[in-house]
Image (cartoon, rainbow over all chains, first blue to last red; front, side, top):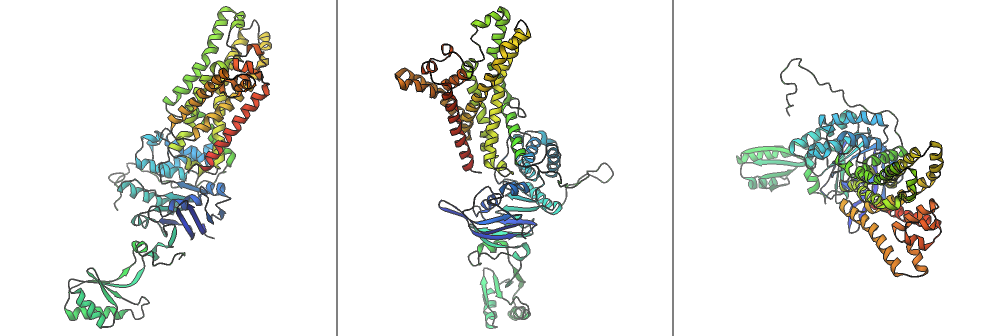
Length: 312
Length: 306
C-alpha cells in the first residue's frame, strides 16, 4: 500500500483551481514535490494534513482518510510550513518542547527529544535564546526541529530552503537528506527549484497548475532520449543535408545537429556510423557526439505534450 | 565537497560523538493532553511567565492596582478597628463594581496577547497541524483566559477575606462573619471572568493586530456603559428598566448584587436599582452574551486561514 495516495483530488477557490483532479501514489523515501510557485504544492500538503478540505476527490496518508482521520494523521506527520511561523519571544527549547507536547509527547519525553532534535538540526547554545534574535538560517532549523519533535513517520517540508543563502541551502538540503536516509522518515519536500530538489530526492512528483505532470523515480526523469546530439565546429547545415540524404531524420538546433535514433538499440549503431562517415567525408571538425538525456526542465517545457496522469 | 576541517589537525585532541538519531517508542497521548498543554501554556502567557520581563509588567502592575483597595481597606480597619468596616465602601459585594475598569484593562491588555501573536507570527498553522481540532484551540484559549482572569479576580477577595478573619477579635467570629460570603464571591468571580473572557477573547481573535484589539475591547466597554447611561437619562417608564441589561457595568453589578443578595438600597448603581429586575435576569443576560461570543469565537477559528 502506498504511503500517500490521492484520487482525483481537486481544490477550487473562487476563480482559481489550485488542484485539478490530481491522482498520485507515493512510496516511502525522499520525495520531491516540484512545481512553479502557485502550482498547488502547498495546497496539496495542507489537504494531506487535513488542514484544508478538498473540493472533490480524496486523499489518504498512511492509509488514513484526510477528511475523517485528520487528528490521527497529524499525530504521525511533521509539518514545516513555507512561511515564518515562530513566536519571537520564546526560546527555541521552550517552543520545540511545547510543540512536542502538543503532538502528544509526555513532558519529560518532550524535553529529551527537544534536546535531540535541536542538536540534530545544528542548534546548540543559542537554543536558550529567544527566537526573535535568530538569523533566517537558524529559524529554518527551528522550523524543521518542531516538525521532528514527535518523531513523525512522515515529514512534510514546504520549501525548506526558502530565504536561505547558498551555504544555508546546502546545509538544509543535507539535513533533509540525512533525515530521510538515516532516520528512515519519509520526507515529502517541495521546491520550485529543480536543480536543488534533484540532489536529495529519489522520487519526484512534478505538478503544474494543479495537475500532475509526472510521478516517477528520479532516474527515469533523466533517462536517454531518442535524440543523438552532434556538435561540429562549422558546417552544421551541410552535415544535416548529408545525413538526410543518407536516409536519417536530422535538423539543426542552434549550433547543434539533432539526429533521430532508435532507442531500442537493435539498429542503434547505424546512425552513429552515418554521422561518422558524413563528418569524415566532409572533413568537418567533430566536437562531440552523444545520446541526449532528458533534463528536468524538459518536463516543464514540454508539459503540454506529456499525457497527464502518468503516475508510476 | 570538502568537509570543514573538523578538529583541526590530526591527534586525539577531542572528539564529537554522533550518537545518531533516536526514535521515540514511548506513549503518545491524545487530544485532552494537548488541550491541557495549550491551556497551561496560555495561562502562563497571560501573566508573561516564560516570556521576557517586559511581558510581566502589565499583568502584575494591574494586579497590584486591583489589590490596592483591599490593602487600603485592611489598613484602615487595622487602624480604626473592626468597627470601621461599617463605613468602609470596600466590601466583597462591591469590589468588582469598584474595580471593573481594572478587570477590563486586564482583558484589553492580555486577551490580544493570547491570540494575536499566533495569528501575527503565523504559529496557528503549526497548532492546527498538531493532533487537535480547530475548535480545541479556541476552547483551550478561552479556558486559559477564563482561568487567568479567575485567579486575577479572586486574588483581592482572598486577601480581603484572610485579612478580615485575622483582624476579627477571635478566629471563630471572624470565620462566622466571613465564610458565608465565600460562595457568592466564587460565584460572582466565575460569572464575571466568564463574561469578560468571552467578550475580550472573541474580539481579540478577529485581528492579529494587538493595538486594534485593545482599542476595540476598551471601546466596547466604554460604549456599552455610555449607551446605558444615555438611554437611562432619556428613556422613561418600562423601557428604562431594561437599560440595565445594556451595559457591562450594570450586568456586572446586577449579577453580583443578586449573588450576594444585596438589599436594593445598597446596590451601587442607580440604573440597576431603579430597574428592580429579578436577579436571574442578569444571570440569563450573562449566559446569552457568553453563548453568542463563544459561537462567534468558534466560527472564527473554523474559518481562519491556516
